[in-house]
Image (cartoon, rainbow, N blue to C red; front, side, top):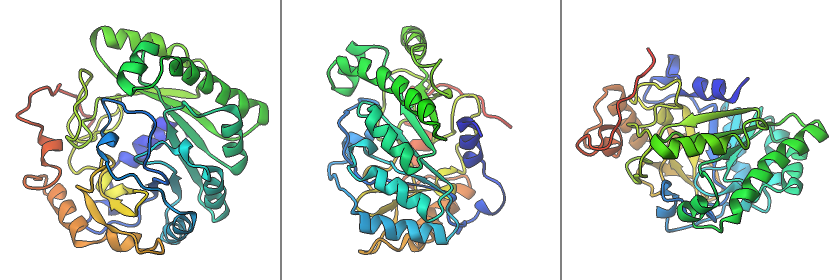
Length: 322
């Protein structure tokens, strides 16, 4: 299955998912470490002032609960950069050992050395996606606050990841995504993508999200809510993310939004041992927000600014699929 097909399947709102108490999500993203060495101006993760790390014991209990309730896809990332996690390969191996069908992660790529990705693939990683959002070294320094040379490192790491996968015969997809900008930046990004497009299995474009109205990057095709990827956008309400995909921060917060870095969409907290995901998933806070989305009226909720914007300024019209 192409990664774009997998994304579109997760985004679809059909059947039992349109409920105040939907089943356990098939896919859950877990942040083992909320830290990130990038400080991108278009990302709201920098607003998360309290950075935490999840213990492996807590992680195992959480994964066990998720698998017992039907979760089959675990993303080992959410707020932070996953390759900062020293025990990441161990986490991959544990997920595969308890029957998780698809283990994936998204990375900024700066730490994706051949040695590190080889260890992840040996542990059973099914997919690695690179967020590729810089046109050159000068831009990665200006936008992410890292040295210019990191851009060349990122390109080399993407190519190296494919080489490791192919040489070892690992069954791991290698993908990349980029934010779609217009004008000169759009042209520069298309040229930059040409450096990796012949290596990755698939590259796709994303609109400029506002991270739940918590951040507002300049330019780009900004959209309301999270309507998915460009090429297959859907209506922003009801928002699929609060019905179909789970998100857990390193300190155990169960978030209803994939952009939640400040507990604005808090469904609940895990217990000290790491259990309690389903309790939070079906909490009154979660049910109330889902009711608003099903009624297609999120005024007065945490989703209001994200869905409706701020007076409509800066929003580009987008075409939704039927």
